[in-house]
Amino acid sequence: MEVIILPTPAEVGRVAAAKIASVVAHKPSAVIGLATGSSPQGIYTDLHRRVTAGEISFTRTRGFALDEYVGIPLEHSESYASVIARDVVEPLGFDPSRVRVPDGRATDIEFAAEEYDAAIRAAGGIDVQILGIGANGHIGFNEPTSSFASRTRIKTLAPSTREANARFFDSPDQVPTHCLTQGLGTILEAEQLVLVAQSSTKAAAIAAAVEGPLSSFVPGSALQLHEHVTVIVDEAAAGLQLADHYRYTYVNKPEWQRFS
Ligand code: F6R
Image 1 (cartoon, rainbow, N blue to C red):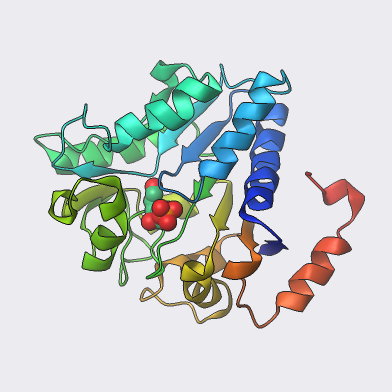
Image 2: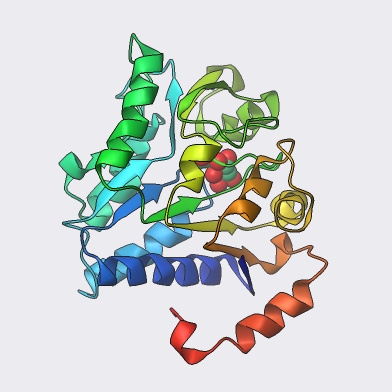
């Protein structure tokens, strides 16, 4: 696992975007796993800058969202289908037909979940998965005690997750209680994982995921099982025992391994 500590949230977004851009430059038809929420916003902003500057194009790139709420209409401004369309597809110029979001409105939710995993496999798998992390250690919406082997499925959102996401809704009780999320097993099948976190509210979760024991109680610790993980955090989120080692490693990274 590579851990990169940067001074500001904007730098986190810029360096993570450079990583995504390097994947797409190498493979224009790459499959990207798309996270929502606040954490990846800086990535999307920097990728938009690169698109506008003509440095990169997403017209052939495919996308699979990490998760979707169950129980709100598709056209709701906070459905992840709406968020992905607004924050990713439109500004970055993805072909909408190449981007999928789990169908949280399906009448047969189990079938929708299985079909989503099958669609990811049929696309050749995810080349690079963007991730944020919840203060309770969730990745995707795999809440504490989610199985490391889990596949895309319906999950109940933890009360603390509903509380954290209430800022996107008019009132806390409007936050759905359920979601469809890629499982930890699904996430671990991606070729590369890029997790970003900013602010002190994420420091404990980052420390537990990166340096703590492997435990389903901290779903983010599943990252330790993956071969190609880049964790990019700002100083405020970096309450890490080996922080100096990560800084040293980054400064001394061989030129040929650098992506920004
Ligand atoms: C979003 C997702 C979640 C968020 C996490 C952090 O698609 O799967 O794991 O990444 O809840 O949310 P923010 O970034 O809003 O703090």
